[in-house]
Structure formats: structure tokens, C-alpha cells
Image (cartoon, rainbow, N blue to C red):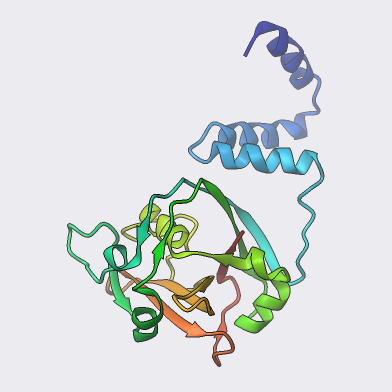
Length: 214
């Protein structure tokens, strides 16, 4: 930062009321942390007044930068393997996932951004789809989902919940049919589980579960 910018900035800070300084310090620490780019983007959107909540029953959590992906072969990545050598510690894939998704290949894609929101109440997948509204914006793909798993390959804290609550994704299968994918961390056995079900499957996700979308 040049002295031309730093001087006026310091004077502005000095003139702030004392009760503002704690919030300012918190913000600068977040901007300087590992998620600084996400916080910077969020602040820019706030200043442009773009971040008014568009949802009634979803609470925005944040936006996640997903790096550009090469060709993604599902069968080579979604593997049940809980050894120390596993790239992502996955212990269970349900039979629907095997049938609908393991033969998928995702073409290379540029970097993108996913949004994450938590459920304000218990909801089923049809209610979540209705809340999201825009069918195209709610869809993600396996490469994006796996990128999130790689960030928390051993169940570390991060965007994906690791307390056995669901992480919810809406993804089209090999036949281009929209399915719901549930991802959760099984704490007792220390591995990720991935299940696929048809939209309308009779099950609800608990309050505070997270949904990921564009």
C-alpha cells in the first residue's frame, strides 16, 4: 500500500469511535487470514448492497472459491478407502451413488464459486429446492463436491459440516436426472459417507444442515 493511501486511512481509523475498533480489528484479521479472498469478496458485495438475503428458511454462510478442475473421472476419485494413503477418507458410498454417478466424467472447468447456506429449520429436499428457486443455480457437480472433500479429507473443520449433519448437493447423474446427494462425516468410524437419493425421497434434513449451490 502506498503512503498516499496509508496516510488518509490511518487518519480515518484514528477518528473512529472506540466501539468501532474491535469490529475493525476483527475484519482486518479475517482479511489477512487464509480465507482473506472470500472475506474481501463478501465485503465488496456488501458495499455494493448485493448481499441482502433472498431466502426465508436458509441462512447464508459464505462463498467458497473452487479452483479450476481438470477432467474428473468419478470412479477414480470416489473410492471407499480409509487407509492412511487415501486422498479423501471415504468409508461408504450407497448403491444409488454407484449406479447413478460412478460412470460420470466431468469435463475440465474454470475456477468457480459455490455458495453455502444453513437450514433455519428441518426441511426436505423439495422444500429446499423451492427455497433456492432458480433450478440452474442450485445445481453443482461431482468435481466441485470432491474439491470440498479434498479440503477436509480427514474430517477437519471447514465448509462441510463434520458433526454428522448433512451437507446437501443437487447434482445431475449420468442420465442427466437431478438427484440429491448427502455427504456427512461419520465421527465414530472417522470417514466420509456419500449417499444419493431421488428428489422427493421421504427424508428430512435437520436444522443447521448445509446446502451448497452456485
